[in-house]
Image (tube, rainbow, N blue to C red; front, side):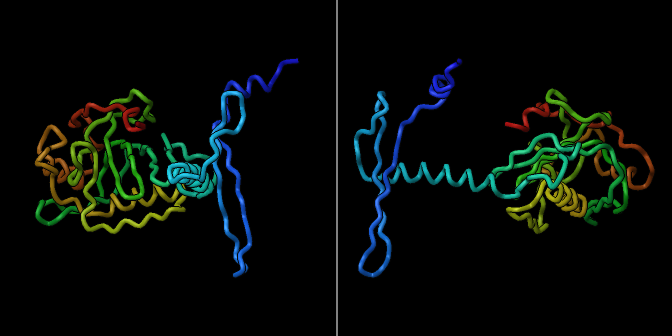
Length: 240
């Protein structure tokens, strides 16, 4: 019979053990003392010492990770939505998803001289944490894969690294927000905010961006993807 104990030992080696002492005080409270032991190569406890601050912090990080796993943040209520590309559900985690070409409401500041209305936009890739959103454009209709090229999102308020300036929009995404609500909230925040300015005067398209959106809102034209400018990123770069 195959020795499973040997296999387990090859994967995990004991390095530390804790001994917890308690005593009741005269005030009817419990006092706790924790003693830490290192484990020798022979598997014996050695070097007994009071639990150090460094050891306590290491334990705290382990327990924190376990607690984060129990939360509902970025976890699905059911089947994983097809548009989701990647999820990191830690407390400071993020999600990456895409949306196909669509018609959406577009709001522009009066200073741009573009009438607000509905217009068609290209397929997009979204990356968001609880506090921050980045967006990129795609060519075509297909769901992207790891080596799919990303293009600059053809909008105002978006920096060259994809990060969106949300201005005065109040972001309210809780620590228990499920994945479905998370993506819907960010899309709603983005499409219902006002586009107002170029970031660093960078024009993300190959023609006048004001004229582009004037035409998109005034007509039923499919977004002209030939006007998109390529970034240096592919989809897999967003998972790092």
